[in-house]
Image (cartoon, rainbow, N blue to C red; front, side):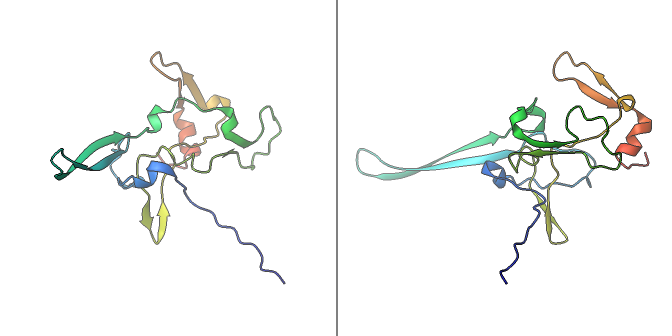
Length: 166
């Protein structure tokens, strides 16, 4: 009998420069202060010869500021593979799981301005984006003249949506 395939769930995935971020994620255990954008230091070492054939070494360093969650103002619908419930569905079961599946696997962690931390031998990293399912009467949408509109969750719905006692 052939070996059965096995599947693994990665709690986070990253690619590109984000793998070099060194600021550790506090996973919500800090006093709430967080950095808005990760910074990386890029260094270029140059080896060159003068006109008199003397070799010299020079280094150039530059601090790079990466795009953070506050810089994202939207994304194309082509980035979404599947949603549940689908748009326009009115008879979705109350105990069903709402979700959005993105085409690029690292999208939920791409703009998190921190590095993953090891907790009990598992690497963990908070996503920068969350899906919150609310009823129409549990929130209000407010216009923001200098940016994107935002929602305000009513206090009585907040505790239910975030499983909080406060």
